Image (cartoon, rainbow, N blue to C red; front, side, top):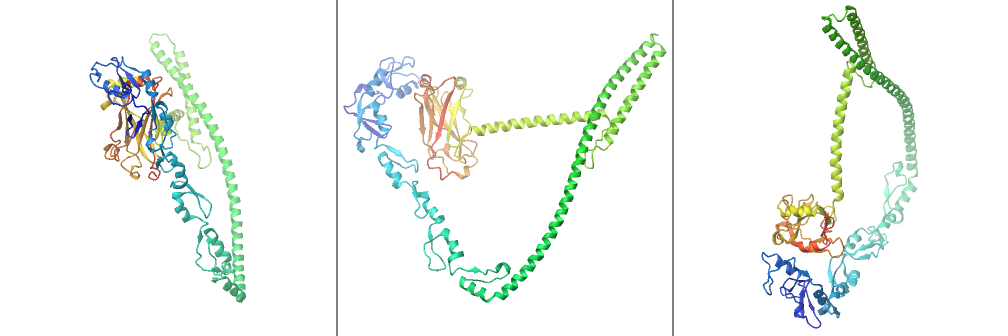
Length: 558
């Protein structure tokens, strides 16, 4: 018996496949068989397609079907797994045969199965992978024959252009051959007889150049001229040395004067600071006294008004009135004296030239000025707090951002989001954006809790969105990287996986001209029935991992 699996390979069964183990819909061996209320069995995916119709009926006996009366048939599933089959790569030469349940385990190590080289992304049979890595892979590591450095095979040409041990041709033709680049300078300056050198007395003004033999002859016949150059150079050096000594002496005197000036200014600043603190203390005491005198004056004025009101009734004597007026005059004198003291303190110098000059008219006006300054400072502090909060939020978003093409999306309060999607209030939600490379594509995921399109009402729909990014001008378009979605089973039994490869002609994957392109992906990502039965939702929270295949992008992303 032959069965098509994944549209790629055929599975051959050793003794054929019993018709009882075939799905009536897809005509293939059962994949997770489910039994309905009428007793017939179907693949899980085939049954979900039936339940997606308006009035689901059994295709065998036309009986009505119900989700609540359907269940997973473990007995039939064990019978399917007991069937003996050959490896899917049997035609390539693999002679394995065994139970159907062990097929996937075998194919994980089958030498005839396809494997992808992690270095160059080329696909080949597993048995050829080792030889490919050692001899054919363009990213294999090879050793430079000249310097012994380990270099990628694809980069060897560039390495040879900069290798310091590679032999080079000497342009002066002095007889030396095969000279490494890093030894060329030493050869020219030390050993080569044809190299041009300066006269040893060039530091004294001789401009003669030539080969080593010619230089030796020049030195031998030019002793007198060289001595004159040395003598002249010595006089110039002595003159410059004298000028430098005078300059150093002048700078030392200037430095000493500046140190004394700095010390005096430091002492003046210390005295000024102490005077300011003393006057601030006096001003605080005077302001408190003014407040107290003002309170007493107001009380006396109230007493005076009361006395004038009661004098008409004869309840106060003239002597008492005079005593009150005298007391009031004394307090007015005290207030005037305090005001004068405040003005004197404010007008007197509190520090040497350059210190602050206080010019307020009274202790009360000074208090008001302090209050205004305090209000301004509090306002500035509030603005800074707001800015710090915004920056803290931006930092948190940056820390949560992924740049390697992989993002795990935590979706909490799922029951509320599902209810809002069913009611049509919020049909879909977006994940935070993440990046395929540090300077690569900006993307995000989009989830429809109650489904969209073919999956509306029966499935969760999972889509992928290409967003407008900062580095789009440097990237290849359209977007062609394979996208994987994984709904994580929090009980670690079985994750739900889907993947798709973008269509080159789809507008969803062209370079974005707005904030984001149209979403594209998997409208029937996972059914509501399977979602409820698995361990995908715990504490009203699910996790979805989105992975973008970055193979082939290393050379295109800056």
